[in-house]
Length: 217
Image 1 (cartoon, rainbow, N blue to C red):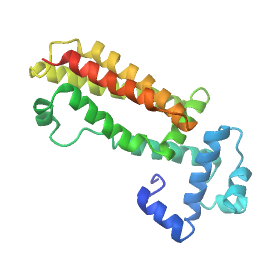
Image 2 (image 1 turned 90 degrees about the vertical axis):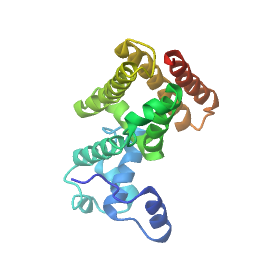
Image 3 (image 1 turned 180 degrees about the vertical axis):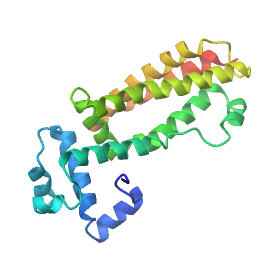
Image 4 (image 1 turned 120 degrees about the vertical axis):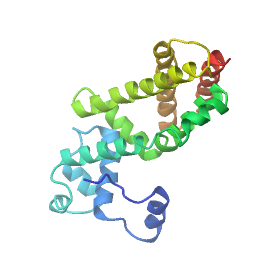
């Protein structure tokens, strides 16, 4: 099953201005809005169809169940996160820029896909459902473990190539990534409530610079 939406964000905005979106896309987006606000269990199919403006029977033409909608939401989130990959020629780039710059660029790639209204709402769903839904739990654990493993590989290879100081790559990756994850979580909470994010953004930048400068030769 292809994750929804299939259009780019720009195309979706344009389509929204010129014509009604496809019903399946409206169901998908409405479910995200309601699940992130009220929690998956508190939202019924009737709640979703009421907002979309269709009959309950019409929803089942697109999704077999509420559970399938949630799975499709998770599929979309994972497909977007898979785009958070190092740029081409990463090994060449590693040796040509300071470690802090490399870490900053890597973080910006992450933000490009993760720091959107839809992804923020899906992340909220995952956090809410982590203790009730095994897939939500596994996705959240992956968000912790995957970046740590990626950073460990970077620090190990950079140290082996003499780009950075000799370090314990696993310990450094944990120190860098877990602190960064907590900072990003706070940033997401503040942003979702339309609160000022200036201080936390500065802390994120300082953390990245600190680790980068710490390992620089």
